[in-house]
Every structure is written in structure tokens, then in C-alpha cells.
Length: 336
Ligand SMILES: [Zn+2]
Image 1 (cartoon, rainbow, N blue to C red):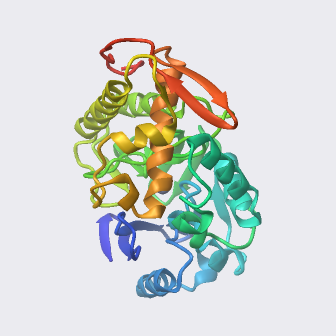
Image 2: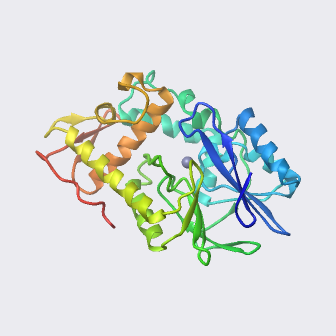
Image 3: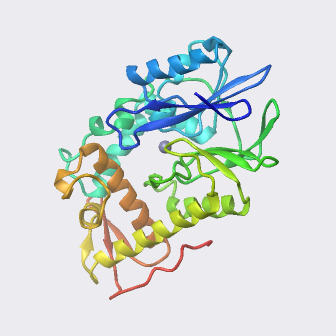
């Protein structure tokens, strides 16, 4: 437990077998309120660590308020601990509804539909391979909606809720303008890059939304970002530039593997591009990671499609992409 800023405490909860390694949780307290940001996966190891850390702060669980920065299971899995004590729980309408759709099941039907769009076989990846499914919250919960522009005060901290759409559709951040920092969840990480994935046709070109979010964050000239994995970010604009460059390189790599006028499924492209996963070949990928890799590949293909670089059709429920050009240089992302 570290007091990273006055009355802002942080600690790590390990995420076993996950490349994320751990999640950084934050607690902000004053005389009236004690607020926890995010929870860890719904698995006993995470619950034990969370409760042990919170016990050092000496306040019973029912005194807490819980904030969820976004819907991923490593952030929301243990929400039930607080819901059953009657604690107020806050999140965005979009991501709160997704967490409840994950608990009651309809979200996973959508993911199985994506498997077909990716051009994957049923046996190649299953829902049970997805850590977000295995360690999800099992019951729906009631929440209070935080809307971008709302204020959220805890003691001397006066936060404005920001829309950080990109890593998830309803990701929110807590911006402290006077003190120049933000609780930014998974939006900017260092040294890893946040997963940007495909969310269906209701959320077209979410990579562009993410890039727009990064561009808006850059204008704030933040001094510090309190990130939920790995280390706090003390040079936010440098890191934002690195993330933009990463996606530009990724877009270039994808279009470079697509030979003129050949047909490619998401799976075909994902197999050919480089991954920082400990596997030499697509077939050796841990199955859980194939979900993320395919989703990330499609998010980039979707960007290229929406900006007119490549063409897309759907054949028997699978997206087929085609690059009509011999060679093309991808410019710096739009909005940058
Ligand atoms: Zn996340």
C-alpha cells in the first residue's frame, strides 16, 4: 500500500496467468468518503489480496463506494462484494450495461458471432478460453451513472468525468484539472499497449475513437496519469505519441502483408503479423490470447476500411478484406 498522492492510496492485485500480471487499484479517502477504483478478477486469489489490502485502511467494506473505470473483468469481477453490502457503485451507462450483459450472458453470444466474422473455426477458440468470461462478475448489479462532464468530488480532489472511449466503448477517466493528473484506467499504459478491439457495427472504427481520445488527452498537458496496469505515467504526452506511432506502424504492417487484390479474413491477417506473445506461430498462441489478437487485428482492419484504404465484404458470416493497391503509405492517424 503506497500513498502516491495525499489521501490517494494504491496497491496491486496479482492477475495469475495473465500477461497483464497485476492490476493497480486506487483508494481515495477523506473524512466523509472512501472510494475504491476497480476490483480485480472474480477469482479467490484476487479477492483475498483485495480484502487484505483494504484491511490496512481500517474501514469496513460497507463504508466504501466503488467506481468502475470500464467493463473488463479484471476491473469489475469482484463488484458483487460491494453490491451485496449496499455500497454505491458508479460507472458509465455504456460499460455498466455491458458488465450486466456479461453477467446475464448476451454479451458472450455477441462474442461468438465475432468468432465467425474473424474466420475462426468453432474449435479454434471457445468462450471458455476467454479470461474475461472465466473471471467475470456472475450477477447483475445496480449502478449510478457517471456521464462525461459530471463532477466527482472526494475531499480536496475535484474530478471531472472524461469520456475515454477506445479501449472500451464506455471507458471513463477522472480528471483533476487543478492538480494536473487523471485516473486513466487502461487508456494509456506503459510499457504495454492497451488492447483496442472490435465492438461490432454499433461501434464503427473504434480505433479512430481511441486515437481521438488520445489527441484530446494530449491537449490537457497532464503531469501524471494513474494507470491501472504497470507503472504510473509521468510523461503522458510522450507516451501518447508512442502509442499513436505504435498504431500507425501496426496499420502499415497490416496493409503491407495484404497483397494486391487477394482475399483475407481477419484470421489470415492475424497469422501473418508480428505479436509480442511467447509463441512462434499462430497455432501455438495461447487460446485466450487469440481472442485478443483477432479482435485487435479487426480493429485495425476496420480503421483501414473506414478510411478507404481497403475494401470489405461479408461472405457466409465472415469478413473478407481486399487491398486494391500495390503499396500504400499509411499517414499519421486522422486527428493527429
Ligand atoms: Zn481493460
